[in-house]
Image 1 (cartoon, helix red, strand yellow):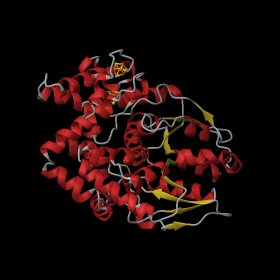
Image 2 (cartoon, helix red, strand yellow):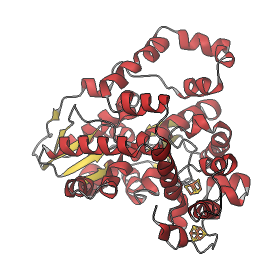
Image 3 (cartoon, helix red, strand yellow):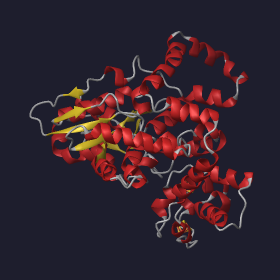
Length: 412
Ligand code: SF4
Ligand code: SF4
C-alpha cells in the first residue's frame, strides 16, 4: 500500500456528509476519514488488527463517494479494498472463496450451469410456493436474502444466444467489442440485447467474443489479486485479437474494473485495453443527433440513479442524463442524492443486510419523492437491489436499464 495516500488525508471532514455508513451511524470509525486513520495506524504498527477494527473496515461499501468529495484526492474506499487485498494475499483464500473465485467465476460455462437449478426453481412454480409459505425463514438468513434478490431469469443466458458478430445497420462506421458482464448475460440479458441493438443501429459492427471471461471484479472484492490478474490477462488477449474502435460495456461495475486493468499491470497491452473501454452511455453520447432522429415520444416521468461504479469510479454523470432528455415527451426528474449508493455493493447486501437495507431505504424515499414512473440505472448490482426494493415498496415504479429505455422509445 502506498503510504503517501494515507498521509494525504488532512482530516477536513468534507467526505463525511457523502459517506453512506457515516450518515447512518455518525461513528467516526464508520467514516472515510476514520477508515483512513485506522488503516494508517495499522500501517504504522500502532494498532492491532482486532476483530472490531476489521468489522469497522468491512462496513465500507467501496462506493467511492468519498473520493468524489475529497479535495486531496484521498480514496478511502480504495484504500480499504487494498488493505483487504493485502491481508488476503497473506492469509490465502479459504475453501469456499477458492471454489467461487477460482473454480466458478472465471468459467462462463460453469457459471451458466450453476444457474440451471434457479431456473428450474422459478419455472416449476416452486419459487412462488416457497415465497407464499415463507419457507425460507427456516433456512440461514443469507440464503433468504439471496433468494429475495433473484428476479425472473431469462430462458437462456445471452452469451449462449447472441451471435459473435452483429452487423451494422446501414453503412458501417466502425467496429466495437462488447464486454458481456456475467450478471448482465445471466440475468439482465434483455438490457444487453438492447445495448447491442443500439450500437448496431448506430452503424457499429459489434463483436461479442464468446470466450471472454468475468472482468475480475469479484476477485478484487474478495481480495484475490492473482485471480484478478488471470482474468485481465485472458480478456486483454482475447480482445487484442480484433481491430476495435472501442470496448463497450453496459455494466458499470465491469466498466470500472476493465478501465482499472492498466492500474494493476505495467504491461503496455493492459494500458491499451483500458484506454479503449467505454461505458455504453459514452458511446451513445457521441451520436446524440442520430439518436434524436430515431427516438419517438415517451410521455413518462423518468429519474436516474447513478451507479457508484459509473459516477464515482468512472466520473460519468452527464451522458446518461443527456441521453434521457433526448427522448421526446420524457419528463426528466432529478433524483435527490442521485449518486448516493443504493446499498448493493457486490455481496454487501447479503453480508451486511441491516446496513444495506437502511441505505436502500434512503434511496427508495428519494425515488418516491421524485414522483417518477420509471427509474433508470445501468449496473446489475443496482438493478438487483432496486428491483427488490421497488417490488416491496413502490411496485408502480418500473425499473429499466438506460439502453432498455432508449430502445423502448425507438420502438414506439
Ligand atoms: S479523506 Fe479527504 S475529505 Fe475526508 S477528511 Fe481526509 S482529506 Fe478530508
Ligand atoms: S467508499 Fe463509501 S462507504 Fe467507504 S468510506 Fe468511502 S463513502 Fe464511506
